[in-house]
Amino acid sequence: MNTQPLARPNRIPEVIGGLMLAEAVTFAVASILHFGVLESFIGAAIPEAIIAVLLAGGAMGVMRRPAGSWGLAMTTTLFALAGVIIGLSVILRGRVSRPADLVYHASIFVALLITIGLLLTPAVQRVLRRQPG
Image (cartoon, rainbow, N blue to C red):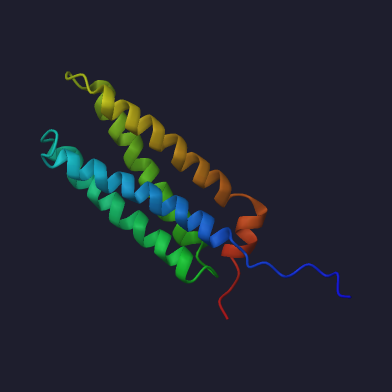
């Protein structure tokens, strides 16, 4: 009787790509809300839309072709993090109180840091830095 465990497919690309995609969706929703659904704040809507598209593209790259996608994942996630830091600075310096924006930006800041932390683990780097082929 064969007692070898069945080889399980590596789920790292799905997990990392899924996190990035979920984060991208939140940026898309925030952008839609800022385009006038709840309030009109075009200064936030356009950057959030750009971040959503780039982060979703990075996520799709990780999930479709994991080998060699580490740089894409890290770059798009760092880009999103930079946008969040800029957004937080605008919120904190603003004259108008935006508690919902502050909660969102603080939450997505933590989520992006978690994604970056995972990308820096040896297991994730081993899978996503492999050369294609």
